[in-house]
View 1: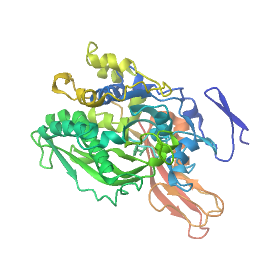
View 2: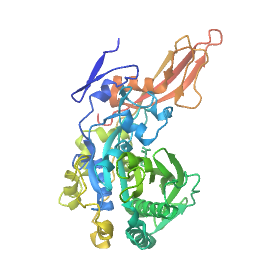
View 3: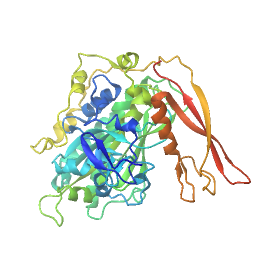
Amino acid sequence: QRPSSLSVLGQTYASDDYTNLPSSILSRLAPSPTLPYQPHHPLCLLRAQIEEQLGAAYTPIRAPSPVVSTHLNFEELGFPVDHPGRSPTDTYYLNRTTCLRTHTSAHEVETFRNRHDRWLLTADVYRRDEIDASHYPIFHQMEGAAIFPTSAYAPGGQVELECQEMEARLARANLEIEDTVDLDEAGGFQPTHDARSAQLACRHLKATLNGLVLDLFGERHAQEPSSSNGGGGGDPLRVRWIAATFPFTSPSFEVEVWFRGKWLEILGCGVVMENTLTKAGVNAVGGGGEKKMGWAFGLGLERIAMVLYSIPDIRLFWSQDRRFLDQFIVDPASDRGKRQEGFRDTIDGGGGGGKDETGVSAAGGAQSPTRTPRRKLVTFKPYSKYPPCYKDVSFWLPSSSSSACSQGSTATTITGGTRFHENDFYEIVRDTVADLAEDVVKIDEFTHPKTGRASLCYRINYRSMDR
Ligand code: PHE
């Protein structure tokens, strides 16, 4: 019953048992990301702000098509074959060897291969997930990375100088950094790395990202009313580092910021795996040429934009309603406005050319006080006056199912050859009512005592943002 092939962005792919691309996703695919490059769009404001904060040393790159090989998205990055993220319940597959990228890290190897040493890549990414105010199957990530040759790690060398410069700025700021990460829990230093250099790479990573968090949240935080649980006002902005695990970095970390009374997860990061740089041809196997080492991070743009601009629902990013879009037109004459419109490179722009060897002054330049831009903080004012409206739907699972339902909230797997996964149900909802569903929650489950058949009941909350 499945068509033998599908056509995506002008290319034909043979379908197989992994093919699971719904029409609602297919119709939104574009040859490169759009919303982060749409002038005045909140994702564009945020992208531009991050690019500006990190400065001219980091080449901005607009990602190519979201259709990637599973090799790029998973294998090259060291994902084991049985990694849960690879399951067709979580990832959109064109077929077994081609998928929609699930993260911007899919482009690490090729970006390093194109001789970019310090870069910031923006892309649309795709994940099958639940339906609620903060989950949408398409969202946007930015991947940032910086690698330096071995000589730059020498005492008193470029990396250390940049660290000192960034740390001096952080020391002057009203910032509290909590960092008690246990190195082993974070994966430890890689065996091929000199421990002192790897430590310095971590220091550079931390100074850079603490600076970014300060730039994104500092001003906002200071404007919040002070509260008992450490709100804004005169209280310092709190950032914390926690140990994490990613197959393509070691050590690995997650960064969280304390904002409006809770810890908000901002990004994942770590020291780039040697394997990535070897695959990219930056580091030859068994030596030859000066080796490079450095770090990478990946952050979700919607999640940060929702908090910064008080956008209550992730569906709003897709709104074409002027009442949404016009709220983000700040100062058309500003430099930032100009920078939003364009980007300086594409992924195969063949960097090199010394732009990454700009060194201390360029990297620090963006953070120098003289260049601190005027910034108008946008706070979104909701205009939807429409109440939510819910409908409950319940259905029997196929009778071959023996035991009933879920453990935990996401997956329900049924034995006897029939599988049911909540993400499949969510997708039916999306394909049918598009963005009108605000959230979908399971509210009841039942197993018939005699027949053993299971039934699930979901509540679909409908609410339009625009009408
Ligand atoms: N790709 C990771 C994610 O999507 C984030 C990440 C990027 C982590 C780069 C480490 C280094 O969660």
